[in-house]
Image (tube, rainbow, N blue to C red; front, side):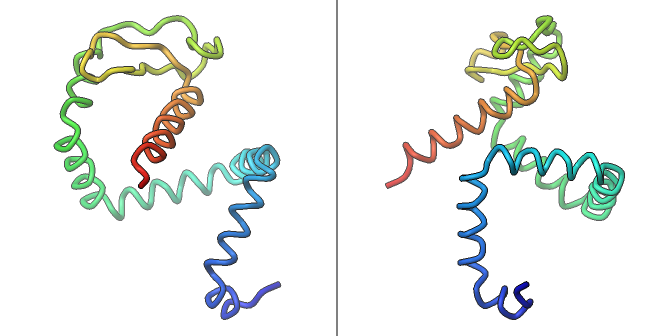
Length: 136
């Protein structure tokens, strides 16, 4: 087991190795994370709550900044509040944890119903794509 000093002096290499392992063992890592969360749910939720209480002002300031910089997204969200969700996810058909997705924030009344996991995956793909397009 590496010592703290070793880890500190080889942090970048350790992180890179860990990232590579996660990419090679993605399914296994996801199962590990799910099991860890199930085993430690109470403790994790308590830590999150404590963090939100401790950093309330900082988080509020960050949220206000995001809303100011993303007015079109905030307006789209507010405009679509009264639009009912479909009965199931448009991608996987799930009926749990449904959310609205705006394919185009400048068309706020056009929404797609997605479950939380499909919505997260979709935005992650969009983010990866925009990073690839914007990379020099």
